Image (cartoon, rainbow, N blue to C red):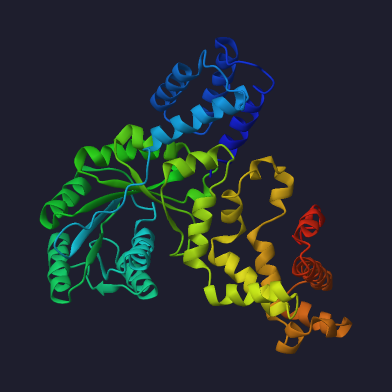
Length: 448
């Protein structure tokens, strides 16, 4: 997300280096580039205009502190304004009602509404420890009801059954009644979508809203539709009292225009973003952290929170002990590290949150992808337990068998073993207190 915008803004702001003061002339040139970058990212034109005006007013004539270059000073202003246009701070879900608290999900067909219901369920269960019931009022698509039932089972939610012969309002009311009897804390209602906005759909969801009086009405929208996402959200907001927006498929959106447009056009906060297909791939939307990502500063806070919630603490402590002693690190441990990385959203998600990643050439980043890690896991899985624990015994005949089992070439097995040995050497150096030397040796020797 924001790949092209990050690249363009980084290049523009870099051009201000070496100048002693921000003048009307150099600010004008820089803001012309920023404007083009935002338009190319499919940010809505009214949002671009207001953003540029705000940055110009704050920047022109501003004295540059001795500790800051003009580029750095402008970056701070741009970051502040990006944060402001996206909503200043994260806005939490409201559960301040007598249970069950009802969350009504709205959106067009194909936006990822049903999957988002499952992701939101998992997030609520993991972060608030509340019980959740899910129900589908999409009586037009039996497959949607079945999909929600399957997902409910996966995330540990109570599923309230419905079928195509029922009325949406009756389904929702019956689900609420069942939730009260079972002392369920939260009910999430998945509604029917359409390929486009129509009067019949709006009337149906208005009737649902009136019947259930939800504490949250969330609009789910595909971020890859750019400023159209913001315009669709506005149409729904005109018909329904939305409380927030969930942006889906942001992992496939290189532009990010929707994230920068939705709040300004609808006046409603983005509460969550979907960052992948798994039910764990939902993040709280923090405008200040997203602004940092756009400017290539990374998002270390989110990375830490993700690690705390998704990493297996027991396995991490075991690995720390092995790192400290420098002994016993084997391919089973290596495989565990790969799996832990996948649990945190994969290498792409991790890299997007690291500061300075924008400085790495695209060619180098393209070589590091999740498919490579999946291949490494497949190779290790094709080994026997003995081979994983004692990689030194893996010779020519074993390599051929492992390669055939994983569907790869022998060269791929050799490459994995080489990477593993490099990693093992680095861990030994770290165990002897040579962390500084290890980090300097890392340059150009990363196993991937």
